[in-house]
Amino acid sequence: MNQKHILIVGGTGMLAEVTSCLASEHLVTVIGRDPERMAKVVRRNPETCHSLLLDYRSEQDLSKGLQESIKRYGPFKQIIAWVHRDSGKAMQIILNHSSHADVLHILGSQANSEQEKRSLYINEQQTYRQVQLGAIYEHETWRWLTHEEIVKGILTALHQQFDYQCIGINKEESDAHERKNE
Image (cartoon, rainbow, N blue to C red; front, side):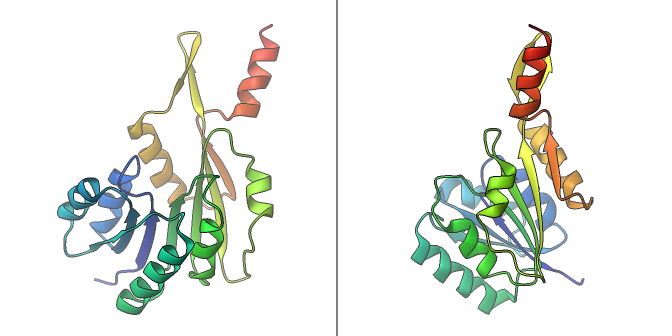
């Protein structure tokens, strides 16, 4: 089997099913902080899913962990990164360690996708795409996405080549919807 090396940041929480799905076909390095959740995710595919138990907000730990993973398993061909806005330089450090990767940056519902992209240096050999998590309007009320909806949306986005995709409706669309209904 020709396995590409995939890095999943935040892959033990809401992305755990994405991690398991990709590790069934590829070599996956997953970054997470919780030892119990990490063990549960790795147990599903112990031959192909490898843990980096660290807090990505620690720039030194993140850089060292990425270097070790690349040395052991080869360069990352794909990145799926659920990196929070308060993470300092974490996303840039990830990009710096994945110079030829297809990068899928997962953004929260409140993130400004253009600002996020402008804040990063993306080299010419990288493909950078964003998936923003929105909300769903049903039964005359808003609700957050379920884990199933997030997993399905991210797996779908991996196979499409859009620069930006929103799962559900993002904040600007929901604000416009609210103004329209006033």
